[in-house]
Image 1 (cartoon, helix red, strand yellow):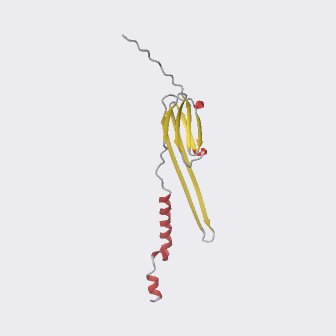
Image 2: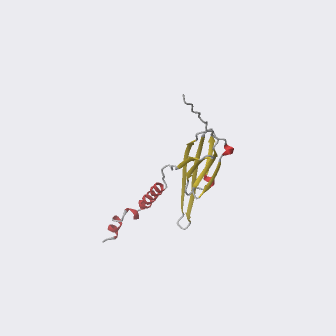
Image 3: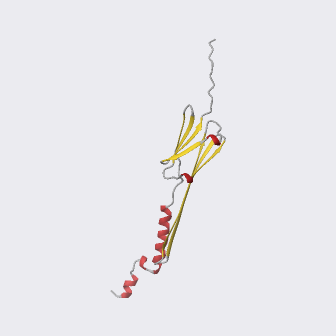
Amino acid sequence: MSDRKKREIQPIHEKPFGDILHSMDHFFTQAIQHFHTPRVIPVHQYETADEYIIEAELPGIKKNQINLDIFQNYIKISVQDEAFTEKKDDAHKITEQSLRYQRADRLVTLPFAVNQSDVKASLSQGLLVIRIPNRRKRIPIDTKEV
């Protein structure tokens, strides 16, 4: 086969536009890999005689990524995860950058109003535990037979 025919039958990735197409393919592949649906924060709530307890499952999340907001009888759990990476290849003069950002919120309604200073929270092994003193008073009901 002549050299001219070899050049004409070359696959697209070996032609001048092949690099551009490869770069575009790589870009979209990377974008899809880092595209996540919004995270749902699983929450379990229960009440004891002394406390109202909220447990939120947050595997892989660090304390500085969590924000708790309290307003009347609501607690908002917010998680923000952000990562920036950069790879440089000086030999080929290539720089690859990626930014990953993820945010999730969960609003928990409480059966009573809460004072922020009463709320205690701890994070251990991916489990956020929020403890609120239970100040609800049960009203006894008298029964009278007629």
